[in-house]
Amino acid sequence: MSSNPSINLLIAEDEKNLGVVLQKEMSRLGHHVTLVHDAEAAIKAARESEFDVALLDIMMPGRSGLEVLRELRQQDQPPEVLMMTGHATVETALQAMKLGAYDYLTKPCHIRELEAIINKAYEKRQLRFENLILQSRLTYKEKAPDIVVRSQKMADVMTLVRKIASSNATVLVTGDSGTGKELVANTVHCFSQRHAGPFIDISCAAIQETLLESELFGYEQGAFTGARKRKLGLLELAHGGTLFLDEIGEMSLTLQSKLLRVLETQSFYRVGGTKKVEVDVRFIAATNRDLGHDVVEGKFRSDLLFRINNFTIKLPSLSERPEDIPALAEHFLALVSGGGRAHLSDEAMQVLMNYAWPGNVRELRNVIERAVILSSGDELGAEDLPLELRTHRMINVMPAEDDESNGGSLDELRRKQILVVLEQTGWHQGKASEILGISPSTLYRQLKVYGLTRSRRLHEQAF
Ligand SMILES: Nc1ncnc2c1ncn2[C@@H]1O[C@H](COP(=O)(O)OP(=O)(O)OP(=O)(O)O)[C@@H](O)[C@H]1O
Ligand SMILES: [Mg+2]
Image (cartoon, rainbow, N blue to C red; front, side):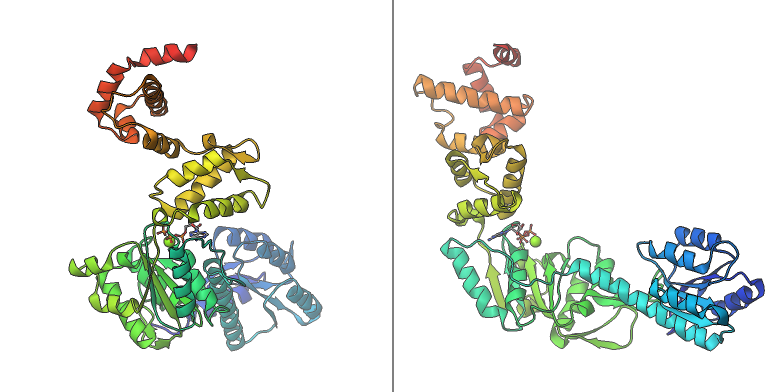
């Protein structure tokens, strides 16, 4: 593996002989060179493929190298640009620097000098690129995220969060989907001394094993087919901060043992690398699985579990802390309506309180966001909430499914409820019985008892 990177280089030089010499020399150094002889061709080439570095002659027939520079700077991921100039145009070269060129060379240029400058320009572009990735993945937060805490259970969670934040200990956050694991992990970081450092999260479930490995550890140029340049992994990018390994239970056993080594030594090797990289990273892991059970089943390494669960923060599901529901609902309402005057009707709040929230806080957030879109005024009513929440409540106040000894009004309510659900499901009796919480055969019987058929419904709707 050569230590020099292979750079994608664009050379625009109208003096053909000089162009060919440059191309030859740069190719000899292992770079991929595209040679063009005027500005138009340079712009076209840069549109068609991505270059790391562009070497542009300033004086060319037609449009000048400066104009090419201007065009290139409009690109999303522009190459670093080096200008070449004769003595007479040094002023123009300085102007080019103002326009964002990386550097300039005066002709005639030495190959060694050119080589060094191209390498530097390439490094700068790499850094810029890695920074961009980093910026998109991490959150530098001035203050901790807003967490709604009303129930004693959540208050206990927050006490624990504060206690363990200041240590460097690895933390395992557990809880069902949507209970706020990521939010809590982020809060631990924000309350720690590392809060000014990066918080980087990666989901071990979202990407396949080999990709996850190179995302975490990074790789050296030539480590595998397609590894054209060195890439830094998230472990390295999280240096001085926190790495949040979400859904750690989905990690393969092989990767688990590699991670264990990192946790133990705070160092690792990039894929295909021979140089040990030392990092200072705090780890927080999260899972909605029972890792103890996975250990028994041989799906999770016991030594890794032992290493990561020094501290476990267990998030209660929302149904275990209904006191949080109103405050969370108001919180999300204020967030989505931009702190406007929107509020929930008493009836709507009652519906929220009666629901079981299998999707926990995330589901509540989605419900409120949807309701804000659907509602016409400042008040969100029960009718703005999804059907499954409302029917759930109706079922709660309904008599037992086979209890037919009740008065007429309850019968009428039940009949209407069945109609509403059938209508919503397009008269799909399987789905309707599921929503109503009764078996399909009971639904069938009740349709007969109440004399409900599809045509009857249409008839009723017409009047
Ligand atoms: N106590 C809380 N206060 C305010 N917002 C919360 C609270 N708990 C969760 N949320 C919000 O609910 C949503 C889901 O939370 P989060 O993504 O942290 O859950 P999770 O447990 O990581 O879910 P999953 O297992 O699906 O990844 C987020 O928008 C989060 O901001
Ligand atoms: Mg999550």
